[in-house]
Length: 132
Image 1 (tube, helix red, strand yellow):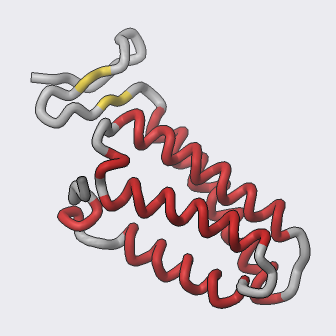
Image 2: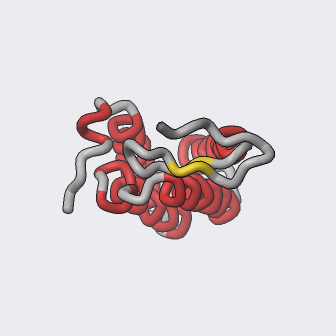
């Protein structure tokens, strides 16, 4: 039987599913999500209101997204075999394209937004489905 990690312990490996954790991982992911949503707000202003600096906002979204992916992949050894892991990598690539491809920015923005919402709110059986 596994136990939750404590500040005095090493990172725990949960017996039943192989997930790892460490103290503060949830807080760190939430901080990265704050930066990610700030990047989304900035990119929304760029796309929808013609504000500048798409590359800066895109890089904030992509770098915070990569941080979240890194933590999720560390915690879940099957992450890159599951729909959520592969979908997230696709989203990061699309955000980089969004920041650099001005002509396709508006339709790509709406596609990435819809894809992100669909993936993050999909049932667990879909998000955690192993694709290979």
